[in-house]
Structure formats: structure tokens, C-alpha cells
Image (cartoon, rainbow, N blue to C red; front, side, top):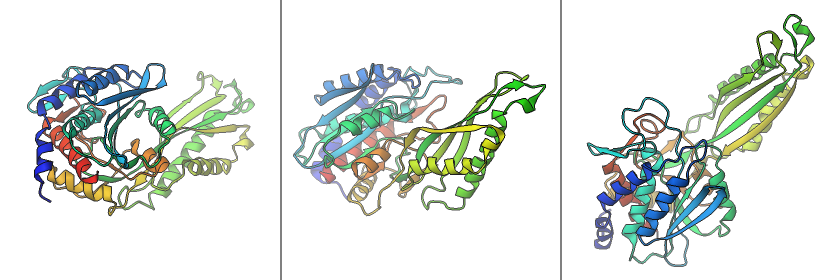
Length: 393
């Protein structure tokens, strides 16, 4: 599809220098999570929104942790939601540049969060700025929430306070996708299995009930579950998965351990119920009859992020994909994403169609040392967001 003169006029207003400056300002405002230090990033984002003449509001989630809403007003019809998060993973080791420096070198900006996802936030703001003065049937809103990298407190607070369920015609989650339109994404959940036994001297192990032995049986069962899931893959996302990431138990080599805790990651497919995943694990653990060993088990799911899948013939998908291509995006097909994101909450809880599309790479840049994003990708993403808004609204 060729660009109309009105569309070209809007795209010509996307300012590369502004994009670079906003991205650098956001990177220079640390937002590590854990422990939940988004306040500096929120301050930088709200300042940028106000400087651009946009409507800016904040909503507290926890002390010092605010969600941000930056809105370009439109008509009274449902609008377009651009969704992002202000937290980043901890810096970690191995950096050869300042992780908070925002270095611009050879067409790339370096620093923690450039790809995941301060670049996406900057591109969203630039799109809103370029759209000023246009006539839209509904508003365009950037929602930047806290705690996406941990337990999703920000998006759950956003959903809880958003009472207008027909407020959005669609949602673009600006996570890093290498500028590919993602129409399905796996969800994620964390499960804790606490095994309780009875301590005794290791010289008389039969006098106790070894919680680590019980935990080992649970781990073996989880591995069997993972292999079973591999037999039923989703066409875009592959299979659901299990992965045990932590085991903590015991107090010393000469003591039969009374407690052991397993933490596992369970990736979810569209349509899967987190509650049913937890219940299924409970049934499998019960079948181990650990009580015969004098053990008890407690199960919990401290975090769950739903999966989603948006039909390819949905207006949002068709319009976004055409806009992405007309904005200069690479020739890539519609795809699924094995990562998880807050867009799943929008799809499940608000019933709004969702795609994921953003600058940077979740596979080669996010969550690693010397994270970076290409300036050219920021420009293309901003153009795609603005063009989608024009054609959807």
C-alpha cells in the first residue's frame, strides 16, 4: 500500500534526533527490577511526555512505583493502546560500555534497556508527537507499567483500574521483536513446591523424613511432564514447557533436611488456564504418595502471565502488518513469540486484540551485557506505530 500525502506528512514529523535523545534519557535513568527502581525512568518518561505537549498522568502501584499513561486525545471511539514497561533486568557482569551511559556509536545506542524496552517507549512517544494535529476517531495512549520483569504488579493494577472495557480497538506491545509483527506469544508462570519433612541426625537418617528426597521425586515428575508436553506443540509457539530453576533445602551435611523448596518455570500456551496447570501439578505430586515417606507438600503459583493468540484476519493485525511494511520494516512473515509479555493480560482480561512489534531483539540483545538498539529500528518502529494509528483510527 502506498502512503497518502496525509500519512507522509505525519511520518515526516518523526524526528530521529528526538528519538535518540529520549532513548538516551531513559537509559540514563536506572530502573532495575529487582528490586523495583522504576522511579527514575518514570520521571524521565513523564518529563518527555510533558515536553511534547501530551496528556500525562501517573497511578501508584506501590510506594515509589507508578504506572504512567501518556495520551494523545482523539474522538470518542475506541483508541489504540501502545503498551510498555519501565523496569529493566539488573545490569549484571560483562559490560564493556557504561550500562547507563546511553552511548551512541555506529548507529546504535548502548545501555541496559535499550532493546527491552526503553527503545520501544521512545518510539511510542515519537509516534504520539508526530500524530499531534491529526484527526483521529479515538485516542492513542502509551501505558508504561512497572514490574513486568518480575510479577506483573503494574499491568494487573492497570487492568484493575481500567473500567472502560471497550476503550481500545487494539493494542501494540512495543517489546523487541526485530520489527516483526507477532500475533501469538507464550505466557509464563512461576510455581513453588515446598516439601516438608522431619529433621534428624544424619547418623540415623531413618529417624527423619528427608525433604530433599521428596523434592527430587517432584523434580523427576516435572521432567516427565516437560517431555509429555513436547508431543503437542502449538503451530506458531512450539510446546508448553517446564523448567526447574531453583532448589533450596537443608541446613548442613550432617542433618536430614526438614524442608526443601523447588521453583519452576512453566511456559503457557494460548487457552491454557494457569489454575489448571497448578491443579495438574498437584494431581501429579499427589500420585507420588510422598506422605508415605512422612512428607507434606505445599504448592503455589506466585506469578502468572497469560498467553495470547490474535487471528491473522483481525483488523489490527492486517493494518499493523501493512503499516510496518510501508514504514520500512523488513520482509518478515507474521510469527509467534516464545517469550511472554504484558500483552497477554490485555487480550485475556480486556478482550482487546493484541500484537507485539518493536525495535531491538529479544534473542540477541535483551537481558545481556552491552545491550543495544539500532537508531534506524527506532525510526521504523515510530513510523509503524504512527501509521497504524492513522489507518486504524
